[in-house]
Length: 224
Ligand SMILES: [Fe+2]
Image (tube, rainbow, N blue to C red):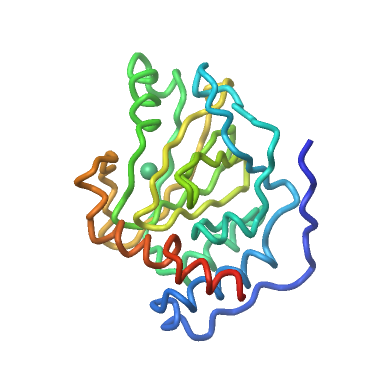
């Protein structure tokens, strides 16, 4: 049983100075501010159990992850029932384009099983990955600071932003259906780069480590 996270009644803080987002220290402070006000009580994240079995099963170890731990990894979570708020967020963060994808055996036919295996390969992107869930359910797994898997369940109206450079993977759940809006900037870099020793020195990975995983980042985060 996961402890519900109380929703606050605060209105969304306006990021009046977006230039500070370029500063890794300010980025954490800003994200902590917005996620504190916007985390939904429905948010569910936990340590992956690492047990064998179909990737689509919950794999819930029973150990919940709190919002602070996700924030420290640079993961931003919102629950947005009102799509006009998505437009506002897109405007604030410079997401100029969007499309919609349905992942299911019906929409992908014989390619479905192959596709979900591909999505579940550990990878990173050189840009943010933003998904606004319109229907169905899925799981995003992200690597913790100690390189353990954290599983984040996403359902309708959840919007998840994964920072560039974070190792992650995705799967549908055992209902085999999810519909999601993908948001992106002018020149999306969708290419999944599968984890390897060579990729560890990728500049986007290095920047992510500096911003979120380094000792310096951890120290700043603990002082926020
Ligand atoms: Fe991805």
